[in-house]
Length: 218
Image (cartoon, rainbow, N blue to C red):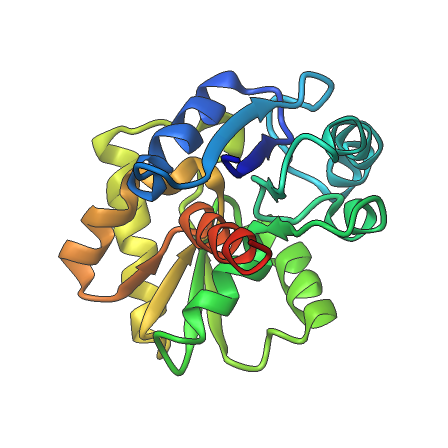
């Protein structure tokens, strides 16, 4: 029977869900698990604050609870990992968050990593999450592109800001950077090409872990 992996965008931005879905094309192969991407309609247009992350936990867990018998693994497509711990209490199947997956991948590519985030104000919440997960010891820094989640777009100006943020992280000692938002996936290759740094797309990292998990469970 074909394995099924559900990827949930916990904000209500359907364009971001579509971008997440496109980024998973490289993970799709004949006979492999099927990725299905859905949007949490009850979520805000963008998750910018801890309060918004906390508020999506209940509807997000309800969605996973409704689908826990249909899917073999779950990916929560937001870098602040909203509801991951709570959702893991609902099912024995893998529930994977982008931050945890992205950092875990980065630790295998580089001694020190950095995070390209949206706004400078996002850094405190990301550091808090990394500390809670025990993943902060090799963090070189966090640099912002100055664009909120709700305004992300694939434009030359925003791409340039993302490249500049990655360069600053390289100057701070990072050998690799993690894209700190599911909406940044389009910038990945350009950052790699222009900086030479490893670039970890956490959507792909989380999807890869989900693939590995369903393979192990047979």
